Length: 149
Image (cartoon, rainbow, N blue to C red; front, top):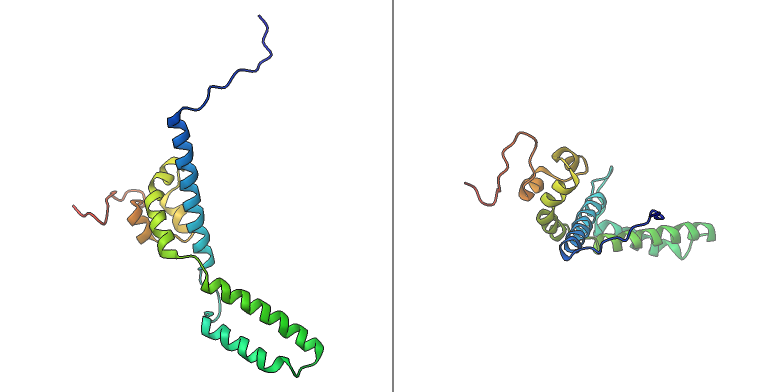
């Protein structure tokens, strides 16, 4: 009997579907937390605050009317950029909530994907957050810091 090499695939079991769904959900939580860490990473120079940005916007509003059209163009662009930055700061991610969700899934995600303590640290996850998740450096005892022995 000659076959064309194609076989019928067995449909996923309910357990397999649940496992795939859990993996997708873990990945989503981890991705959101790492993206939030990236956005909140300290940058060189003075820290930008809502007050400092508002002050700059007010200064632009006070000077833009009487300036030369070319200067007005540049000030208008600066105003757009400052307004966007202000919105990002005001509506930025809630790090505490994302961290809480991350702590719940990080251990399972690490085991499933083979992610080590140093890899998490390299991406900016603090040792304290990793300890809450039950992830420790190699050679350290695994314990839950919320429930000491």
